[in-house]
Image (tube, rainbow, N blue to C red; front, top):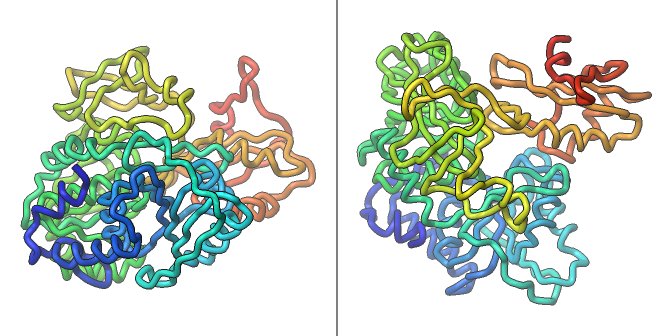
Length: 479
């Protein structure tokens, strides 16, 4: 069953279903927008076609998402944080049949980069471009029809492209019902709810969260731009009572609203944190919200919703998380292995790492855990060296490989260190000859996503080693 049939078809046309910073749409109005995009795509069935989407207007992105999915295409939302190397890595890996793109976001011309990529290629790519995501110009490049996509699923999210080998994570429509059941109980969703979500709309977590709110008959309130004034005004206007976002974003919202609209905060019943590790001490930052329930949601890019934990003043230093009832688990050498109904299908066009991710049907999460009791656990760390900055995951090795390309850099090690706002910051330790911090930032700018650029660059004479490997514990101790 596609998302349209599963979610929108059963909603009353008069229900207010989606609110953005600029407008609200009923279910009926969304259906009209979906029909417009179906007509634009001029096809009754796009099965086997990959459609990439770079759209920054959420009230257009959501109906376009539904239309592409309804037409049986493989939908691929691409991060608007992507820059040249990220973007080209995804395009070369995916080779989409159709691309929807805005002209420019934050000074970066997506349309130029995409057209440059398509120009000269013999295989056919149809590109839709727009300034406002309403009026679209269509251009065809190439003349040879492409083969159908090999993706074993209905949509693909890409984790990164900076190293030239982006990792596409493939999902089928069937995962949605499983995740919806988990989130429905976790958030206690009701038709009377107005739930505000601020997250990167290209991610799996945002996709399933937004669709879950809509399926429950609640009003989905979404911001596709970081404008605190408009966000607070929209939360007030829609009578928002529930929020899902990262701790760093909510701290910004709280600090702003507590001075100008404190009543908005007092109406909130639930705040769900995603993307960053939190401790009970975070509650001290929200003194106006004593009656609000705070929870943290644990998810995986590959396995979807895994569990949640209530944040209270009585909690230990580490929050105890509880696996959702539907999740099967076991612990192997302190690592959490899972079987869930929201598991990804494969890594796109990469059977080797797909096979490495599983053992006897169990997905190896990379999360190191301790289980004080059955189904209740604490996160201890990660097997992989992953930095979580402002709700986004940055793989240290990816940034190290990228920086090694700079002439004059002899060695580089990237670590994550605590940050008051973003949870973690990116610190690059560099052994180099004739390279400055300015050179590194200049090289990164426009090539990788801004959030991946090191926040600090520290030059050292040589890397500390342990067992012939860089001693990152020692590096962290230097600060």
